[in-house]
Image (cartoon, rainbow, N blue to C red; front, top):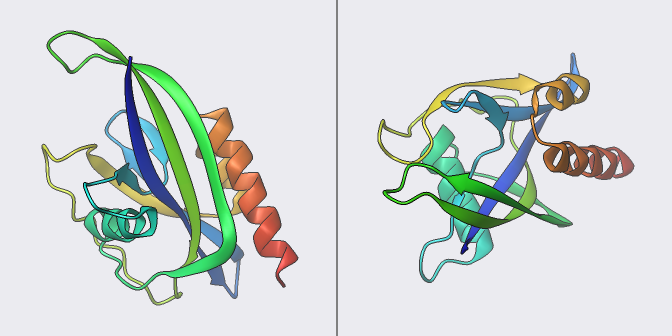
Length: 151
């Protein structure tokens, strides 16, 4: 079994008309997720998180929320390799706030990692419906609770 480490960001904004909204990316594999990617040699987790958010949605200035980091693991079968193998993925997620005026620019190019077909800023309940994986739903619940406890 191959072991991989990825780092991502639950990116949110405070919309004065709607409330807290979370950025979800619609991936070519037909599911929604958060910006994330593999750690490159010599990178810290935060450096990976910043790079991945920039590479996927064009945002450079992130306001990371101190004291919040979650980790989850999952196993899946990689079928894109010559010989399909089981992958154990460790995913670290950070929480960061974006300004309401932040523009999203889908920058990832075809053939570079997971193809992003779209994005949406979703309220908490809608984000829970869109997320496919139970572990990500649980982490989003923790993030939302943390944000709301900081008010």
